[in-house]
Amino acid sequence: MGNWSNAPRVPLGVLQQGECRAQTTVFRPNPEQLTQQCNVGYSRGLCQCFPLDAEADSFRFHVATDRGNKLEIQYVVEKACWPLRHGVLDIDLETPMEQNILRQQALAFATSYSRRRDG
Image 1: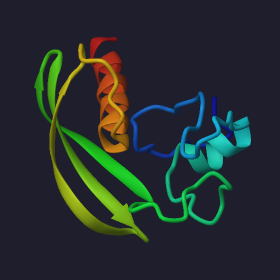
Image 2 (image 1 turned 120 degrees about the vertical axis):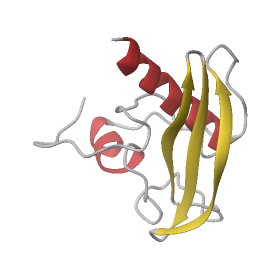
Image 3 (image 1 turned 90 degrees about the vertical axis):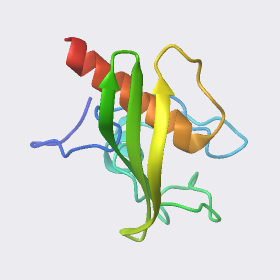
Image 4 (image 1 turned 180 degrees about the vertical axis):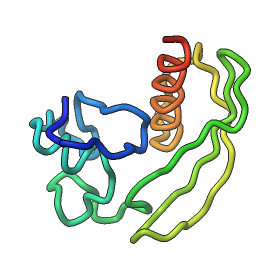
């Protein structure tokens, strides 16, 4: 997936696809929306599903420690290209998905990282 001649570094490590659950109604973005909005962050004002009261415009992630299925993921919460807060999350790849959006995205990032790591 992707319509880029040179794909940018995406926040979750690899291009994602699927359902948007930012609103109460589940929405399936089209390929252009995925390429230009969903996968790069900063869709405030561009996407009809982006919550107007959202704390952040994007989350950024980095693997701090790799212990196989247990990873420490550093994160930065950004709004208008400025960091709002940051921290470290312990992610267990064998733990089911959580409801918290930051942890969901950190788990998606950790999963894509482990797939690239494990080949």
